[in-house]
Image (tube, rainbow, N blue to C red; front, side, top):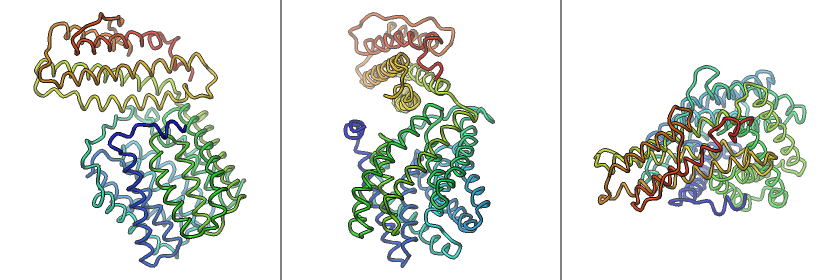
Length: 495
């Protein structure tokens, strides 16, 4: 876990800039709300709204990010009003919360914008429970949310819009399907069921802090699609919470809500959340737990007993998510991982064909976008295979095969990057051997993805750079035939 955070690559220092900008934007939002004369509740609400605006908006283009950011209050303010009105009506409050959970997850079918708006709606309702929001507070909180989202937008699109200098990220399309065959629809049902369990059991554990359990269930479902992914994410959430509670006992409890120290620790926590989110969910949860503890310290209710209660509620929420994915419309790790692997292999072939066309002199052939897409697909493969390679997985044979698949797919990506680099050289040339090698790559991919192509075979060595990379690709595909070729030997069966 330590190695993943401190040695993970950060091309262009994107994660560093992402985290530093978050501290700046959230700090600006807090200052603006303070200058507007808002209460502590309003300042906390505004700070969390700015955090969400800077964290959850992930559209591919700056223009798309700006549109999504502008839509956040339109989604969050009605939800805030519903939470405040239903605050003293437990049945209406709980049913509304479950509806927000289901609709928030279902919105992911509309891509990054739907995901961002769904998260903002859920967290707005969650924050209303956190702060015990009442109708008479709504005017102030409306102003806090609006001013904070505006401050976040000024920071993101005005003061420090580093995305304008970066190529737009390639976001793979979600798996196709209709009705309950669509992953987002199944997840909406699962998340609602899991949240229902967490809500009921969470209230039995604590009638005041039950919403922590629902929040844990919700966040376990974010960025997961299969039963195995959800199990691993639930474990990491609990682990991060435990470590965060230990840190909070050392830092937050002794601080007693002291202003300067609290501001410093909150800033460090925000930086930690944003900097570690992309590489370690456990580390991110550590910082989230510390941030929550510092906020409770500001509100004057923090104690060791409250931190112990947070641990219990987090466990309830994680259990709710696990039960939901295990018994409500389950999606197996095998099904999800097999789909992502097949898409990655088809992208390997498309990259090879495009690079070969570039070498043949086709002016409009550009393999670079496909390479970017391949990297994103491989990231999804790693995420879906994570349950199989997890240190606590007792099935060593399946773990070895899964690791072998990941290593060979990484080999494919390395050879593809080398081939694309050669194709970019104006002096590079194309010949019949290259065309034949590309045909063999296509046949190998067809064989591995269940088509009727010939089985992949090992290719001879070559001295020419382009041929050397394609032959290296052929060898990697040939070795992939062992763990992926026969269903009985697949590293994914039964997961």
